[in-house]
Figure (tube, rainbow, N blue to C red):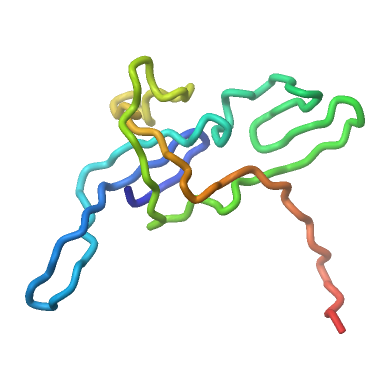
Length: 137
């Protein structure tokens, strides 16, 4: 699947396939025309843990808070999903794909695939850099 847009819990993708171009004597990637909605893996979605506390960490979308220390962190998925990234997905299992957004915007496009996350994406803390960084010697 070729990523076209990323949302909190799912991706809008196009199908991809390889096709041999005899004139050019090479394989070329061909992009499909239909939108395919792909759920992100459960831990990469923003809503399953929203408002819940797990192992002393309170989840609120893109930020988390350590309940014991009160320390808050903003986070992002690394590497981020970018337009034209390739993701590998499987059709959903009976009962849905584990996303709270079983239908994409407008409620007409069912999310029918789930990303296998073969690129090993995960959450990482956002780092704030100084506005005037000192160069390294």
